Length: 241
Ligand SMILES: [Zn+2]
Image (cartoon, rainbow, N blue to C red):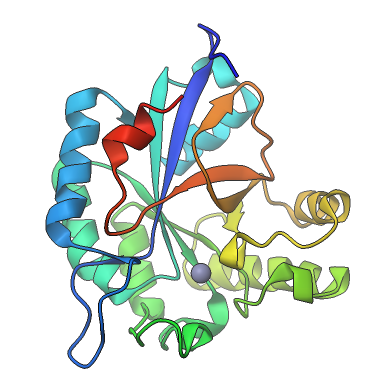
């Protein structure tokens, strides 16, 4: 599709782990080395992609004319300790905001939903999340149980969305307005899911993968993201549209 002159492009970067695996673990594609992450931030700064905070981005969904021509939203799924320890200090150096999508059942625990697939890594606890929120990181929903929505009934999906939002708002503060579907799995019936998201009070929802979002046009409850792994060529991805 040709890119119109008035189109606004937003790259929602989707990271998981930053830095090295813990002793006893192993490297997977989901570990982005610290040096690579720093290269990404330098690239964004040098190439003029504006890093948006969550409220600016959500405002832009309603009024795309307010979005910069080229913008980036930096997001992290699951809430790994490595993000708090390695990525957030680097982001702070650049003055870049970010969004953390956390599954509430696993706060303070481990990514046991990845058992047998990914090494076990500690996840931020409630104190960590409150500290991150005070430092300007937006803590948002990744559901409760990190299950695929296609394996849940609509009632269960509604509970995941309601409970995670209420828990985060009560225990971290701030408003939970956006979520990321676990595994990018939005469930079988778009119409139902969109209705539930709207009813529960979410303004937007993110898929996993799918490239850049273009506005006007991108649907707020099925936002594509750039899946960021160890070998992702960010410069190429940003140049693709
Ligand atoms: Zn996840």
